[in-house]
Length: 183
Image 1 (cartoon, helix red, strand yellow):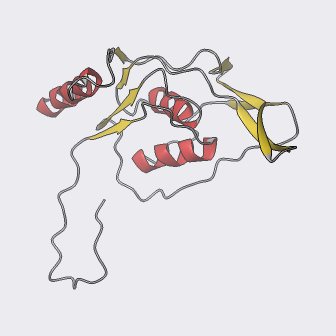
Image 2 (cartoon, helix red, strand yellow):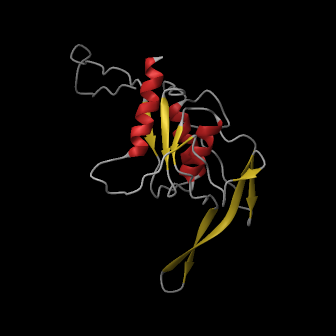
Image 3 (tube, one colour):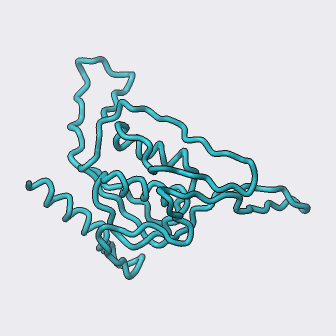
């Protein structure tokens, strides 16, 4: 992907070289909704849908969720990317990890995700408070992610969050992609 500033004329612009590989870091308390997870996967490669397999939403109310299509014009990163996950990865990031792994975008590295995938809704309570209630869960290919999570292809522990810059999960992903580049 190239970004060309509007202020430069075509003769002044030097396009950057395309990326060889991409590492997507979904560690931490990243959330969101299924439409966001779908858009992230579509940014990586829009040619295969649905990313989830057969999806079934199990509702506690009649609220429905819809996957919003993104831009299919991006260059594919399938086979040229790695995804980093950990026990804090949840919600839409967990859906993305499932879709990423199911569709073989590349290696998934880290520790299993949180298993926190239920969708919910906000309700206004007295005293200007909000209550978030789980309203639905999802099944993908007949299996729930709620309470189970997504297992990595390459399990790598990150013992300390502050270890003088050491990140064994990132190092493992870099090593996997560098081996792939050598082929």
